[in-house]
Length: 147
Image 1 (spheres, rainbow, N blue to C red):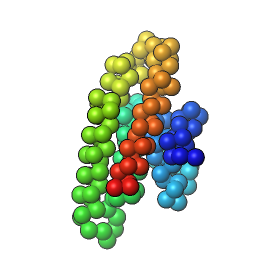
Image 2 (tube, helix red, strand yellow):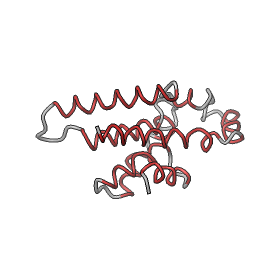
Image 3 (cartoon, rainbow, N blue to C red):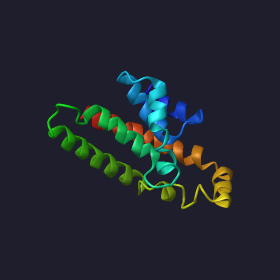
Image 4 (cartoon, rainbow, N blue to C red):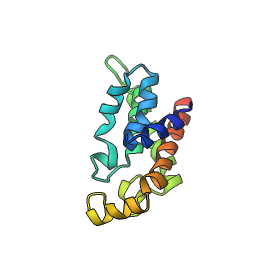
């Protein structure tokens, strides 16, 4: 199963966008599934449901950090490479969707407002919009990892 399909399966099973994007990458590198899901949980809904940076994007950033990030004893070039990959991620995601801002991606609706949340549910935006954001974030990340 592709990472995009794995991410879609997580998302359709009530995991948030960040968990869904990060977990296929983390488990591939040997991080236990539950650890991936827990680590990414707070990033869903645009950073703890604040609707800031899209959780699919933050999950992708964590995946890029796992692949390229600076660890103990590493040269600062690893950090620079990670930042460059992150800029490419943002650029590609914005080119495709116009923004990385969760609220904007959700048609300006506020998840924390009961009336807006009702509209989100009626329009099934998580399935109709967010599933695509999750899959696109995974695909962009895969391309960036391939180089």
